[in-house]
Length: 159
Image 1: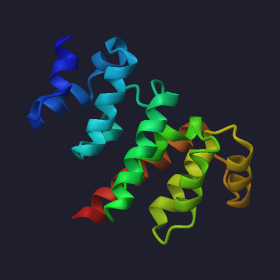
Image 2 (image 1 turned 90 degrees about the vertical axis):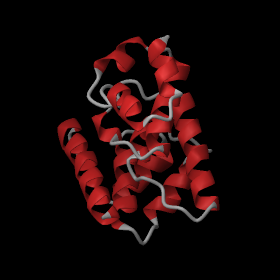
Image 3 (image 1 turned 30 degrees about the vertical axis):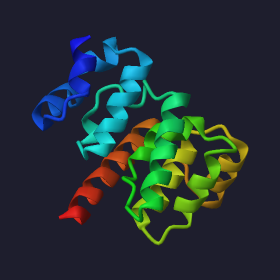
């Protein structure tokens, strides 16, 4: 309960201590609190790649929440962290796929790469077709390394 309360905090150090390199949230938070934590990590620009269990705890509701968040960012003409699509990939469907198509056509190389990596985690036929079009096939370990590479490049671009 205290962990879930801590996620509501606006104290950066508290949030980072809960979110980053800490197995407790992944092992103990209920899905709604987990989803709130992941969204807040993106919203507060915490190092999302340091969230333990990010891939394993991804879920359909989180994918929907993050897609909605991306739409809000786009509507405000703000960038979307390409790591967001890491949590969305396994849950690409007819509602989310247009987002993936959008970033696959982006002028930003990190967004295009994120689209293809997201598709590599999806069983949705159009996502697989997009993946084949990109001539993109990776092992799970290579996929994780590519996401980490996106994270590093996005941080460097922000400097």
